[in-house]
Amino acid sequence: MKKLIVIADLGRVRAFEVKEGSLENGGHDHLIEMPDVAEEFDVKSVSETVTDQAGQFGGGNGGGGASHAEELQLENEMERKNLHRVAEQVDRIIARAGKDTTWKLAAPQAILARLVDALKPATRQHLGEQIGADLTREPRPKLEKRFL
Image (cartoon, rainbow, N blue to C red):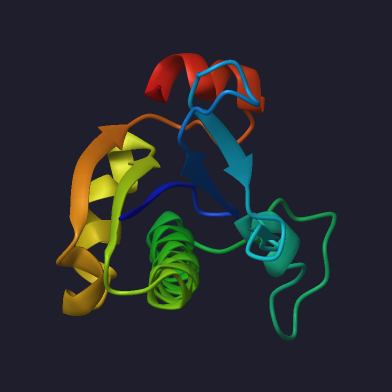
């Protein structure tokens, strides 16, 4: 049975296959990063997305800029789209790995439940442990200490 660990946030997805120990590698399990599935998304902030209000110019009168409610609505929509893209990538990784795959998911606690809900039922079916932590920037040796 194949074992995977998928690590994600709203801007990056990484996947590792657990390789069981053998005489060749000292008998210890290792994580092998799957380079063909690692993906980073271009996540922009609201200020990078919205540069100007239609029909208005910056300066002078102190006005301008979107209202707080509009900004919050835009942030929520951008987060929803990014979450959907990450879920689609995770669905592809698990589908490619095959039906006999068990896997763990690590994602920031703030998005973990929504990410799991956004996954296809077939993907969720073999999901084991869910870890609420942003580990996308952690080096492989630290991930091995945490997961193996």
